[in-house]
Amino acid sequence: MRNSKHLLQHVQDFFQDYLGAHRGLSSHTVTSYRDALKLFLIFVAQQAGKHTTSLTLDDLRAESVLAFLDDIEATRNNSVRTRNIRLAALRTFFRYLATQDPLRAGQYQRIVAIPIKQAPQPVMEYLEVHEVKAILGAIDRKHAAGRRDYVLISSLYNTGARVQEICDLRVANLRLATSPIVTLTGKGSKTRHVPLWPETASLLQEHLQERGILTESQACLFVNARGEPLTRYGIRHIIQTRVVTALPSCPSLVGKRISPHTFRHATAMHLLQSGVDLAVIKSWLGHVNLATTHGYVEIDMEMKRKALSACTPLDNPEKLQRLVEQNKDVISWLETL
Image (tube, rainbow, N blue to C red):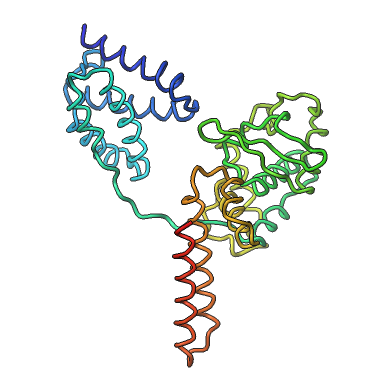
């Protein structure tokens, strides 16, 4: 029982002090860490034939973590990405334990050293300009729900915001007068200011007036029919519904997996294709480093190479090869930034 209490105390300190006070992680990240550790401890207890209250620090070994990771892929059908998220949470916990329990530091370091599993990178899905217009154009704005969805999707596209950033928006985050902007709070509680197009600012102004919350600074910007703040899943459902409505007028949407994040990719690609500097796009999206933003450049360059291949005469392969090589040089140069 003494060892069990010792484990419990470490877990409590990890969540209450380390993650919250010292790391300042968001509630969503803390919840993800909690779920990972809960699943792991339940798995270890089942494998050991114990109750979770009987687990000790000696039960938490690299072999158990590896078996747990295999199990969530095999029995829970977790993707490699989800597996890696669980592992990242466990590595953070055991890295913390190594500082608190030096006698077992070697045991914990073996867990921290478990590598992330490589997974094929999915093709980045984004929307063309005409597809965004088709989705917005298919929304019936005669009804309140349609007007809300129109300004919601317009805001997603204008800002390139993560869906949780949109869920968290309050009236106080908007400045709709001269040079309108929205203040977004992203990962790590970092804030950034994103300019609003005049059309989006006007839509938001009308939305606030219709709901009667112009002067209610802490009122949530987007709510459901019950007046409750929209969740990530609620916004995903709205987008999927609106995409279905737009399919008859825009066949290119068929087969595309469109989520709130798809609009974020669309914003980045359209800014890039409009000649906006990479550093500006990085700031706009709230990326931590430029390497993340550079992924859009690689997609854009690949599109341009394919376009060049399609329009180059087949009887002039030397010209095609020269153009491709020029594009390779551009990519190499960009990678040095």
